[in-house]
Image (cartoon, rainbow, N blue to C red; front, side, top):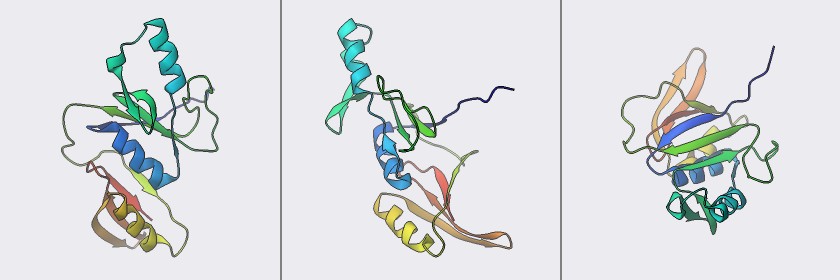
Length: 150
């Protein structure tokens, strides 16, 4: 049986802001695709309008990803080859509840500190949940996507 490579893709109205938020939240690195973009621009394969400047380097206008800092990545293109989240621009804002969400797990006794840190990054607390199976905080990222902090 073949093991499949995967990534989580999140629709966003501002993919770069989402990448910045989730990179900080998870301790992930924002991918640097500038070398690939420069090569493709040099060949005339993509238009300049498909790019923006983000954190002092060229990035794709409508796509940007974050990757786990310990995972392998393609050095020529900057694309992660392991755990990664790709944010893609869509024209419409989020509506309705997520059908898929991330659970962020903190060190024991650190949940409240982590919730406070995430609020400074732009997350909002929706509610505190306490059930027989556990306790967590339901939060939303800057674009309203739900996630849980355990």
